[in-house]
Length: 303
Image (cartoon, rainbow, N blue to C red; front, side):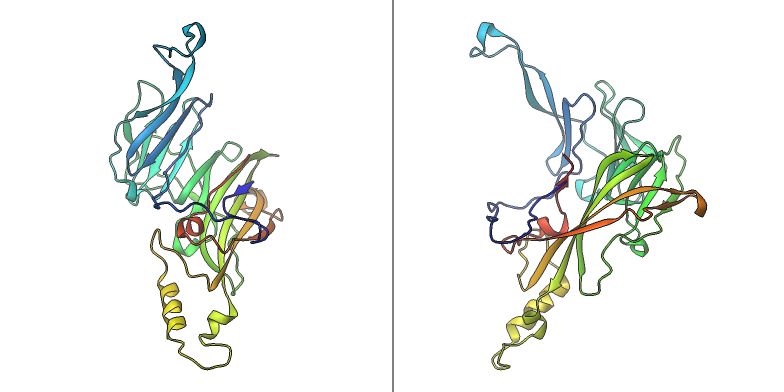
């Protein structure tokens, strides 16, 4: 499990190269066999495929045909990239279907060559997730972080929807976000790590912030001087950063990694639960990391 930008200490990590921030892709897919990747971003909907190069390049011995990666534009979706609230992959039928949820609807895109058409997945139904959801075959359901503000920090699952029917959802009994009053939620990413014993294995990467004592005081150590700059900085943090802005480092940031198994509790009406499987570890985010994209949308993957 790797979380981008996380480290146990701040002394051995160099700052990342500065670049103009851009919204992250809505999805990165790996349908079997792993010869295609699809990306939805502000530039459009594209696929990166591994295909034979023809005609072959002259530098290849005996003009042998080799496979190379190449980009290809796909049909434009019937929504804007900024409208995307959640997304998922449905691999059940042997072909990978790309699902995208907006605030009001859910759309499907069959990645099979020759069938690349956007279609409504369900009438007037939006997936109940925020960010990426994952299909867990042992649960026969999609699992993701709930987008309902009343269920912030909880997981939810929904069965597969067919023929335009709505899907009923289950919300986890446990809240997985930090409940320490000294820690403020900044962002989170749910990573799927496979299945074991008919349960889904996950890791939740949550970024939390803790105010440093010298910032919370709002004045200098000797009690003198103009504290207006500190007050303005605190007010700015209360409003929250804009995309691409740098956060003032009067605040310490941590990545809080929670690994757990997710299943149904038959003794409690089939409720969604992590049981007693949660294990938590924390890693300090280096002080050189100030871009909000690293904090509000942690980048993590399972190897």
